[in-house]
Image (cartoon, rainbow, N blue to C red; front, side, top):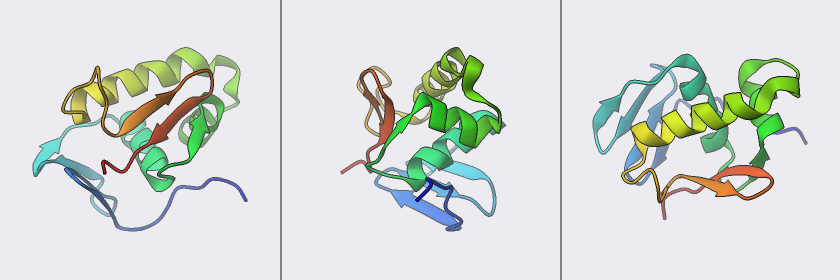
Length: 109
């Protein structure tokens, strides 16, 4: 079964809320300004909490392109996303790195 982006209008996690119908993200009630790629990457990860997603899967879902040039793009977007939504970007709560594979979204428990 392919990983997909959920259509739930609100994805809600402790301290983080994604309102898909408005394309808005709130961290602890404060709106966070994200680029299109950051937003789509976050939604893709948050749609599959607990699942390990490879950089290729993220790239293909978000960029809609083949994954030849994916590595640096995904790394950069994740880096910027963490700076914006993580309370401590060096010790992420939400977007965890799975070494050698990719990333997974932890629901902040």
